Image (tube, rainbow, N blue to C red; front, side, top):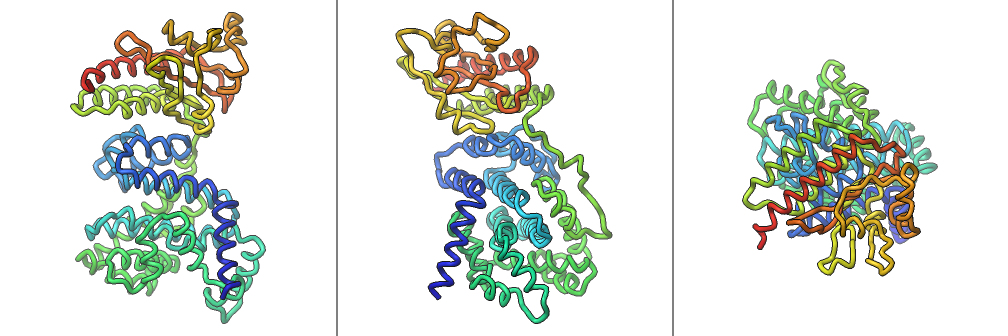
Amino acid sequence: MTAKRSSLDEWVRRISEEEMPIFGHTVQQVVSVAEDENAPTAALARVILQDASMTARVLKLANTVYYNPHAQQISTISRAVVVLGFTTVRSMCLSIALVDSFVQGSSRDRLTRELARSVHAAVQARALALACEVESPEEVFIAALLYRLGDLAFWCFGNAAGDQLDALLKQPGYSAEQAEMEVLGFPLRQLTIALVREWRINELLITVLTQPDSKDLRCRIVLLCHQLARAAEKGWESRQVLELTPQLGELTGQNDKTTSARLHQNARDAARIAGYYGAAAAAAVIPLPRGERVVTEEELSLPEYPEPDGMLQLRILRELALLLEEPLSNINLLLELVLEGIYRGTGMDRTLFALLTPDRQRLAAKFALGSGRDTLTTTFQFSRTVQGDNLFFYLLDKPAALWFDPARNAEQRRWVTPQLNRAVGRAPFFVAPIIVNDKAIGLFFADRALSERALDEESFQSFKHFTQQAGLGLSHLAPKRR
């Protein structure tokens, strides 16, 4: 027994620390935000916005009929959290992070089928939970999505053990659990339980896995929807699907015909959502009625970095105006919205807001968006010196926006210092102080250092416009906070 347990521990350690550290980190970030009662919704937005690909996928999902049946236009992550709710966007974030971990791993057929089955079951479970009006449908979604997390992780990172188990499963006379015990010494269900506990993801899932006979309706929904996802792989007219349909209909009080139509639509939604998550291969094998195809390759393509978008800029500026009309406007939310406007609307790689201390002697990053934002936030820390050789303090004392590019403007070379290069690198950047009641309180910084795309005059003007709106907005809110 001890040998088997240590083997399970080793698999958990390997997957958590070596194979899926990014997913584990994202889970920790999202869970810490969820557990902090004082954390603003902007904290969740920052977790998402640090990844341009995740941002684009969350917004695509937020504008689907599945998540947004009233078709409210959602242009920003902050707006998505407000309109759809914290738990819904949190669910999207965890799901995308999970899919990212697996689509970059092995291309094993079993992994693709497991991922397709998990997404299909999760979408069916959320729809059923909503119809049954149970508590927290998003928790039901995550529980169904991760119900076979151990299987997903194993087929992605199993290597030689995966080959051995795959070969054994193809032999007659072996059940899945018998084969798993022979190759691993433990069933993959135990790996799922251990990983879910390690990452503290979902208490409902622990109940489903350890108490499958629980009377909790949410547990039954998860189990039934996994049975349905597997049965549908044999065809929507198969005996297994026809037997499950009335059981699912009984939960919602609908007849078989209505239930069947709803299940078919959920399958279409699942294929589209799997594609938006980034799992195109899984989307293609989710069983659809009559062999339909609902997602095109064009719909799934995403830019690596945000592209300038004039219409998005206008929508974010409109959201800023609406925010300032609210009686309890939030300064942090305003700053986040401006950052998102610069980052996504102006099409930058990295965007940062830094705040000046009350004694005006230190400048430190407060919020940042874009890839590597944690590193940028750490390095963007400056203290005023007697020499007065810091570009940012110069701009704060004599407030003016600047397009910093020493290669094209020789006069700017005097501001190039080792500290500046360590903090932000050598690429050109935009910087603008924030003026509140005629006094600079901090600044915005933005660049395209990661993609090495050129800066341009139109982007600089857009950047300046957003920073000016930030100053006006903060000046407007300042009296309300006295």
